[in-house]
Image (cartoon, rainbow, N blue to C red; front, top):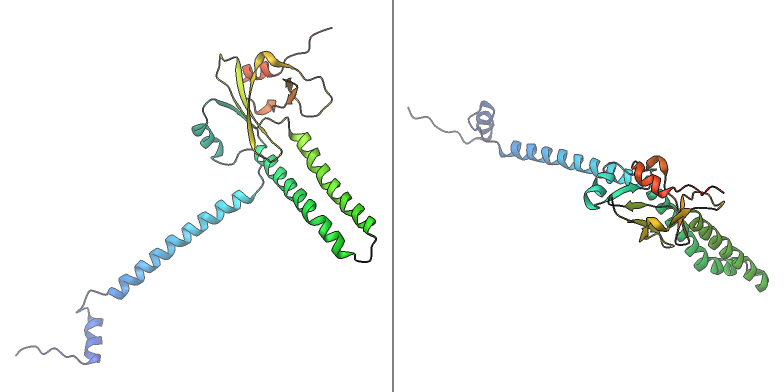
Amino acid sequence: MAHLLCTHPICYHHHCRSGAWQHTPGLETNLNSAAGLTILQKRWASKSSTAEDDSKISIGPRRGEEARDDDDDTGVVYYGPISSTIKKVKLLSLSTCCLSVSLGPVITFMTSPGLNVILKGAVASTVIFFSASTTAALHWFVSPYIHKLRWQPGSDTFEVEMMSWLATYIPKTIKFSDIKPAETQRPFVTFKANRNFYFVDAEHCHNKALLAKLTPQKAAK
């Protein structure tokens, strides 16, 4: 007797349960969705950890940053250990200075309508002067800091990267013959060259031969 195929929903459910149909597209879709969700979660966690590391103010180069710099910059023998910190602080100071100069007078004249105009001008000028003076003092304090130094052994010159007012790096080429002892009471100064002061962190300068050239001894009187 020929086997009759039952199309009743109950029989269809029974055949599916008993394994008559092995192909289950819905199950494969669920598995693919779960795998895709797991991959997205891993990517999101990786991006979150990277963003958190970038938002932190670090003292010294970040993980992998010095290795990338070695690959991109040839001849670099010294990196300033707090270069990234100085740049972030300088950018913050410049931002507050710009806000004080642009919004300080407006806020002063709008918040005190009954105050004398001369007093308003004096208050606005004081705010601008204080913000500009702190920014200038910060630049004066960190201007000798060398952020990066390139030198080829045997060369009579070397190149340094300094930071400008706008927190941008400026390359300068210096001759070893122009280096002189820094006869000043100014803090964080290692040597003087071409009427400018420069600072190198001796603990992080691993090339002792270069460090000896950058720190000349004062001539005995």
